[in-house]
Each structure stands twice: as structure tokens, then as C-alpha cells.
Image 1 (tube, rainbow, N blue to C red):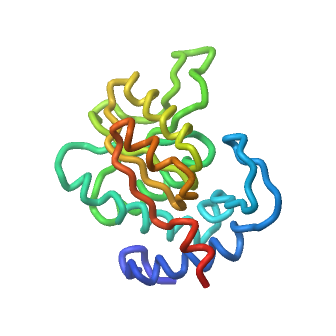
Image 2: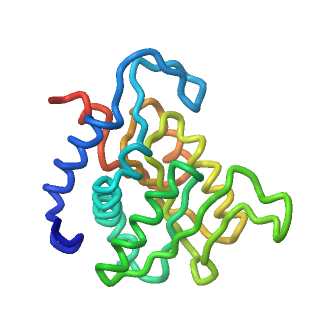
Length: 193
């Protein structure tokens, strides 16, 4: 296996798309986290936690947000647990291997009921801005919740990056909230042979 520093972006995209189709995409009757019914399901965790998928996730998400860290100042990376956790970790590791420093922090669904009572966990003290990541999104509600938690911790979310955009309103909701929207793939990419 080549080093993450040697994987060409086009090759990483092709390999990840094939892996999503193989292990994460299914057709049938599903109820999504948003409560919507769908004829297909994308279980992004099956890809982002997959041994090779984790490497590809880090490469693809790093490339999707590299320009934001190059704008200057520390950049955080966060999202709602559990779906975002492997993306956050993989991206921070690839960034470090490439000589960049992203600050990973994880967003609980609710603030902890004991200890410091935090909703965000990780080292984000030097961070003033962050990127929200997710495997998939339908309405954008989870990303908006993570953005609110970041703002409550005095970290301004600047963009949301998805592995797969289901193209069912998330982009519009997130852009309306003032967040730049980026997706590595759209559902159309998955359905096109």
C-alpha cells in the first residue's frame, strides 16, 4: 500500500466511489435519521471506518478543505458523533502527515451531564474557525446542530463538507445558515455506473 502522501486525488476518488458502492450503498425501503422515507440508504460509516476507506476519507476530506487551512490561522474540524468521528480523525491524521495542523474535536449530541458538562471534546483552544464534516446529509439538521455547538464554544463554523450529498435540501439549508457547502460526491455519482 502506498503512503497517503503518494495517493493521486483522482485515484482516491475512483477507489472511494467503488468502495461506497460496494459496502455502503443499498436500495430498498429505509427510514432516515431525518425521519424521511427513502428508496436507498448510504451507510457512510461502513466506508469511513473501513481500513482502506479511512485512508481514502482522510485524503479526500483533506483535499476538500486544504484551501481553508491555507487561508491562515488554526482550523478546527468537527461534526456530530458517531458519523463524523472517523472523518475527523482520518482528516486530521492525513493533514499532519502532509505538514498541516487541523484541530480535531468531537461534538456530542447533547452536553455531558457531569464533569465539565461539555458538548465538544478535544483540543480546540487555539481555534477560532472550523469545518463541520459528515458522511451524508439529507436536511442538514445534524450539521446545523454541530455548528451551533461550535458557536457556543466561540468557534465559528465556515463550511460543511460531506462525503455524499443526498441532494434533498441539505445544501440549501446550510447555505441559508451562512455555511459554505462542499461535497466529495453526490448521490448521482453513486447511481451512475
